[in-house]
Length: 171
Length: 319
Image 1 (cartoon, chains in turn green, yellow):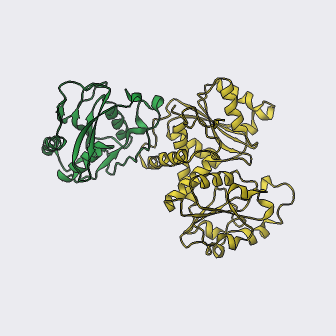
Image 2 (cartoon, rainbow over the protein chains, first blue to last red; image 1 turned 90 degrees about the vertical axis):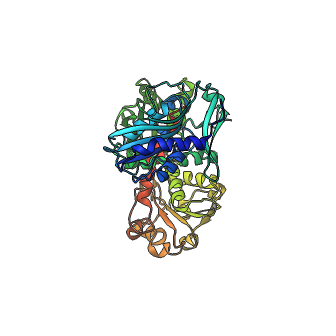
Image 3 (tube, rainbow over the protein chains, first blue to last red; image 1 turned 135 degrees about the vertical axis):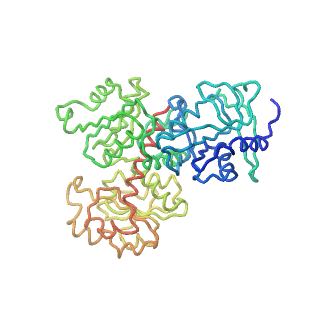
């Protein structure tokens, strides 16, 4: 896989979303990488609805086998979900299971009008019928399962994409 | 010997007592409870974590609040809950504790929440499950005799952390009937493990266990002396139903000396919080004005109790 410029991809993602933003648009970032992206998009695109955040730990489908992940974060949806135009933001789209969990959680807050998905990178290997409406980059070939691709944020708020070996238990 | 509450990976398998539980597990439970507090504000107050699991509330001793909060916690995790008040059913007909458990296992129980007047009953059930190859069934102690009430201890720790942030600079006083109190034992174990530098117990000699100092606490038989400069006042209920023999003169006399009034509370730090596990005996261990006053955090304790129990159940329910 060639080196990915996360900052360039971020700008591309913002450019894709910008024309679709209306006063009814709300962003919801998925912890942790997706929330970083959503925070920056929220400011840059002048979104007026308050920013939402979802931690899908309590909705994961592998809870029975893997248990709770360390230190789940607080889900906060500070706008009325009913009828809203919601853009879910995640850093990397993989199996689609995180998106499924986030959708289920979102619907426990109300009935959104439209939900779209925005991701920085689509790494392939989907296991559910999930597609991103906004996607800055799709890998030419799916990444092997033994590798993790994650967004990182340095002290100055700059994004990088980091490839690491997945812990054995997650393969 | 391995702590019977932990599995071979050091993960929590049953919650029987806080005594001997490592600090990182206590902290993990408190951390996990935090996001659960938000669920109550949703349109759908439910999470799917325990969907399809059966939780049996096995209460051999009366309790409304504890049973209700366990029931709400399990239901908010989407579990199916069955409440059994055994003192009015099979036990009265002579069935033994373990026979009752075996019968409920045959009904595909996944978790038992046990309250029993005998210390050690939940441990006995956990051992029985292990010996009979039913390791997948979890046990939570909801109060056993004078021994332990771990979820109460945990929700108290959650409350203290919520209001005081850090345990390592606090002075905490536990006041009243420590002798009969499983709550006090769980509180002392948790406070000590979490690094509270000074834990005090305050009460008449007849209501403090002998050698209570060995638990790592400072003992006071003078309320005014004991409350001086404390950050947290944890009141205990005077357990009339457990009193045998003449441990006390009268409730009125007790209130005069050991009841928490505004005057006595003024000796603590100005921002001290007042806690009580409930049910309160107003005018016995606590004055109404204090119980309803600005420093009381007794109702937040109840609310946090649901989140803490959700955290415990979901941590046990997973592996």
